[in-house]
Length: 316
Image (tube, rainbow, N blue to C red; front, side, top):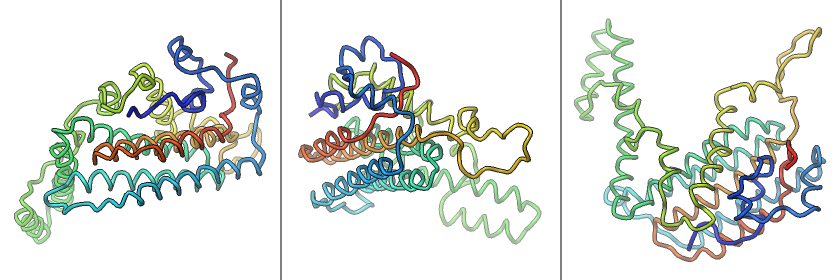
């Protein structure tokens, strides 16, 4: 079953609310009605409404955790079934990142939460790639796990360079290298664990068995623009991430701990959390050949229907 079925306007329209929709989006996503346009134009949410929205997403995360637990999956031994541990480790990381984003929003760090949501997107893309081809799942999981040793090679090279004049330390490093069958080489760790260049974009471009008519490349390209490219500005401290921290003119400068912006990015983050947790769970279930997704899809659909769209910045 496709990861996006015809759930109606709530399934995808929310995360595109500030974008000028393309003709393809018009063909696939029913436009928001007049009431929703009005609601989306509200400048800011009240404290009470903001708490209600956070509670909705917290409840969603709890429900999704419960759904996965109720499947009674017992991961097999890591030595023979690395795939189980890589997939479920990544899924747990996705849930942890989602929870952390909500904590940031709750404590008035909406922009920081928006930046953090990119890590959730990356976990989801890892799961998409890991489960894309059943015949390659074990190999790809092993490539992910083996990157641990490339990191060890990197840090061994750094340590040997820093302590190059310390004979005792160098002897210890050499013994560690022999015991763990590694060599001091920083280069392998500078590549992506998959061995692919531009991994995120390439993974978005490649089709997945769960893709359906509502998750074509034209859709995934827009999702990438919002979930990865736009959030990257808040990861790297680019203009959009710094703009709301600009100082007041002709006033004594005091470092600001909280953004001077509104909750726009916080509301967008809630949509990102709901959306990418749903995808992460679906990819993990697909990888484990579990077809019972009705409860997962229902929780996703119902939660989106109860979220207020982010405020529109442009008229359509």
